[in-house]
Length: 194
Image (cartoon, rainbow, N blue to C red):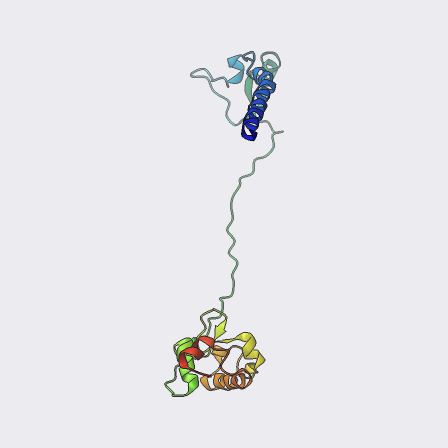
């Protein structure tokens, strides 16, 4: 029942909308008187006649006087009162800049030791103590910068991957003394660390 009411309501709105808009559309479709074609098109010069060059379109008609009577367009040669023309040119300006300093090459500092830290580094970073992959973790033991600074790693280097293996192990031992091996959860489980 509700569906039938909606269908009738939509039909009523559609029909009434058409009835309201039809007078407007009839008015917009009314024919307007045609403008004379010769006033809409520029007049072509007769063959062999000299057409004015470098003129300015100033009035309708073949001359300024005829413009007042006929309404056609005409070119009037430029006089001394005409505004000067300006050529537009693009200019490329090179601004010298100093080259960016090259980042120092970080060699892959691997170690084939037998300590728990070497095993942990092999698990965390394939044993690369100088790794910086851009994921927010640095060095062989993948310290975050906050953890590195929180356990006084900044005394060795600004970032963990810039510190030596031994310096990273010193900071890792401080961290282990405070929290155990919990900061390395995945590798802790793989290596069976407490």
